[in-house]
Image (cartoon, rainbow, N blue to C red; front, side, top):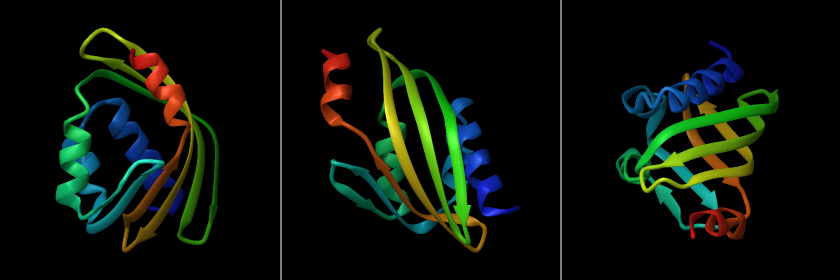
Length: 120
Protein backbone atom coordinates (compact mmCIF):
# COMPACT_ATOMS: atom_id res chain seq x y z
CA UNK A 1 0.00 0.00 0.00
CA UNK A 2 1.11 3.55 -0.67
CA UNK A 3 1.39 6.02 2.22
CA UNK A 4 -1.79 7.72 0.99
CA UNK A 5 -3.68 4.42 0.94
CA UNK A 6 -2.52 3.68 4.50
CA UNK A 7 -3.86 7.03 5.72
CA UNK A 8 -7.12 6.54 3.80
CA UNK A 9 -7.49 3.10 5.43
CA UNK A 10 -6.80 4.72 8.82
CA UNK A 11 -9.49 7.36 8.25
CA UNK A 12 -11.95 4.69 7.10
CA UNK A 13 -11.20 2.66 10.25
CA UNK A 14 -11.96 5.74 12.36
CA UNK A 15 -15.24 6.26 10.54
CA UNK A 16 -16.23 2.64 11.22
CA UNK A 17 -14.93 2.96 14.80
CA UNK A 18 -12.77 -0.11 14.16
CA UNK A 19 -10.36 0.67 16.98
CA UNK A 20 -8.46 -2.60 16.53
CA UNK A 21 -7.58 -1.67 12.94
CA UNK A 22 -6.79 1.92 13.98
CA UNK A 23 -4.30 0.54 16.50
CA UNK A 24 -2.90 -1.99 14.03
CA UNK A 25 -2.04 0.85 11.63
CA UNK A 26 0.15 2.56 14.26
CA UNK A 27 3.74 1.59 15.05
CA UNK A 28 4.47 0.55 18.63
CA UNK A 29 6.54 3.72 19.14
CA UNK A 30 4.09 6.09 17.39
CA UNK A 31 4.19 9.75 18.34
CA UNK A 32 0.65 11.18 18.35
CA UNK A 33 0.26 14.91 18.89
CA UNK A 34 -3.11 16.60 18.86
CA UNK A 35 -1.77 20.12 18.73
CA UNK A 36 -2.37 22.14 20.97
CA UNK A 37 -2.76 19.27 23.46
CA UNK A 38 -0.02 17.22 25.09
CA UNK A 39 2.03 14.92 22.85
CA UNK A 40 1.50 11.18 23.39
CA UNK A 41 4.29 8.70 22.81
CA UNK A 42 3.76 5.01 22.16
CA UNK A 43 0.83 2.94 20.97
CA UNK A 44 -0.41 2.29 24.51
CA UNK A 45 -0.79 6.03 25.26
CA UNK A 46 -2.43 6.68 21.87
CA UNK A 47 -4.84 3.78 22.38
CA UNK A 48 -5.89 4.98 25.84
CA UNK A 49 -6.68 8.42 24.44
CA UNK A 50 -8.51 7.15 21.35
CA UNK A 51 -10.60 4.53 23.14
CA UNK A 52 -11.36 7.04 25.90
CA UNK A 53 -13.02 9.53 23.54
CA UNK A 54 -16.50 8.09 24.16
CA UNK A 55 -17.89 8.92 20.73
CA UNK A 56 -21.07 7.22 19.52
CA UNK A 57 -20.24 7.98 15.87
CA UNK A 58 -17.29 9.33 13.88
CA UNK A 59 -17.31 10.90 10.42
CA UNK A 60 -14.00 12.25 9.20
CA UNK A 61 -14.45 13.96 5.84
CA UNK A 62 -11.25 14.30 3.82
CA UNK A 63 -11.33 17.58 1.90
CA UNK A 64 -7.80 17.32 0.51
CA UNK A 65 -4.98 14.80 0.73
CA UNK A 66 -1.41 15.08 -0.56
CA UNK A 67 1.72 12.99 -0.19
CA UNK A 68 5.43 13.60 -0.54
CA UNK A 69 7.37 10.40 -0.07
CA UNK A 70 6.39 8.86 3.26
CA UNK A 71 4.57 11.98 4.52
CA UNK A 72 0.83 12.42 3.95
CA UNK A 73 -1.03 15.68 4.62
CA UNK A 74 -4.78 15.82 5.10
CA UNK A 75 -7.28 18.65 5.32
CA UNK A 76 -10.35 17.26 7.07
CA UNK A 77 -13.58 18.04 8.82
CA UNK A 78 -13.69 15.69 11.81
CA UNK A 79 -17.22 15.14 13.06
CA UNK A 80 -18.13 13.28 16.25
CA UNK A 81 -21.40 12.39 17.90
CA UNK A 82 -20.38 12.28 21.54
CA UNK A 83 -21.90 9.83 24.02
CA UNK A 84 -23.36 12.70 26.07
CA UNK A 85 -25.40 13.84 23.04
CA UNK A 86 -23.23 16.64 21.68
CA UNK A 87 -22.34 16.87 17.98
CA UNK A 88 -18.87 18.25 17.33
CA UNK A 89 -17.32 19.27 13.98
CA UNK A 90 -13.74 20.54 13.85
CA UNK A 91 -11.60 21.57 10.87
CA UNK A 92 -8.29 19.69 11.10
CA UNK A 93 -4.98 19.65 9.25
CA UNK A 94 -3.21 16.33 9.75
CA UNK A 95 0.32 15.14 9.09
CA UNK A 96 1.09 11.43 8.97
CA UNK A 97 4.57 9.92 8.68
CA UNK A 98 4.65 6.34 7.39
CA UNK A 99 7.37 3.81 8.29
CA UNK A 100 7.31 0.18 7.14
CA UNK A 101 3.62 0.38 6.20
CA UNK A 102 2.40 1.91 9.46
CA UNK A 103 1.88 5.37 10.91
CA UNK A 104 4.90 6.28 13.03
CA UNK A 105 4.01 9.94 13.63
CA UNK A 106 0.62 11.63 13.56
CA UNK A 107 0.06 15.32 14.19
CA UNK A 108 -3.37 16.95 13.99
CA UNK A 109 -3.61 20.74 14.09
CA UNK A 110 -6.95 22.22 15.17
CA UNK A 111 -8.42 25.04 17.23
CA UNK A 112 -9.11 23.75 20.73
CA UNK A 113 -11.54 26.61 21.42
CA UNK A 114 -13.69 25.52 18.45
CA UNK A 115 -13.85 22.02 19.90
CA UNK A 116 -14.46 23.16 23.49
CA UNK A 117 -17.23 25.59 22.53
CA UNK A 118 -19.18 22.74 20.98
CA UNK A 119 -18.74 20.52 24.03
CA UNK A 120 -20.28 22.99 26.52
